[in-house]
Amino acid sequence: QVQLVQSGAEVKKPGASVKVSCKASGYSFTGNYIHWVRQAPGQGLEWMGWVNPHSGDTNYAQKFQGRVTMTRDTSISTAHMELRRLRSDDTAIYYCAREVVTSVTGVFDSWGRGTLVTVSS
Amino acid sequence: DIQLTQSPSFLSASVGDRVTITCRASQGTGTDLAWYQQKPGKAPNLLIYAASTLQSGVPSRFSGSGSGTEFTLTISSLQPEDFAVYYCQRLNSYPLTFGGGTKVEIK
Image (cartoon, rainbow over all chains, first blue to last red; front, side):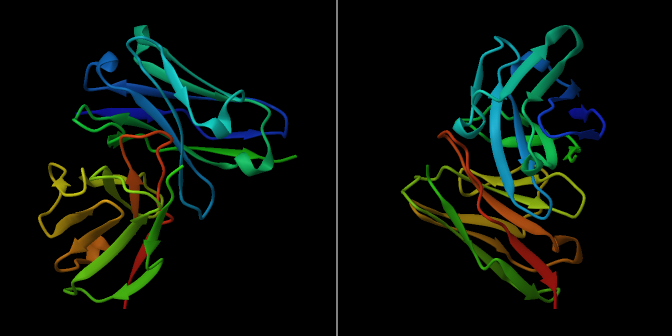
């Protein structure tokens, strides 16, 4: 079955960077885009961007342009999301999600369990 | 960017009730909308996409309808496992956006 296994929780200081990983299994990794979505404590969902595991192409939400980098390593079926210059309001659970191949884009049929990133001095 | 507004933001209902949640878009979006369910401490789970297509494995008591700027998620007979937060999501256009969520609690 499809599984997305994310790396563990992180605690970072303001101004630092964090890199979260998402290891895929149970399907062909290069066949589906991987998206990243975050959720601040008690808040809603916020889309950050995607990486195409086949080509490495990316598309980021404007809010995160210049601060986020999404990459992939096809040899280990893993996607990564790095967020730089962290602020306290970046404290959130970061999810990776697989986009299902359908006639519409942006449908997420499988999600990782989430990685809590806490930014605190 | 297209904004999605869900109503109500909170609702209290009993097991067996018919529940309807509305998602309104700031601009017409055709049928480019999905619905997710999120339980505490868990990742969201896809229920419906393209406004009315039921995701495989999702119980048939869930249904979606609408087009343009107004969409609804209906649970025909609320079950104990349905108490959760529900989100709508814009599809097919970036940035992908989510509604603010509707929390369904036990009356």
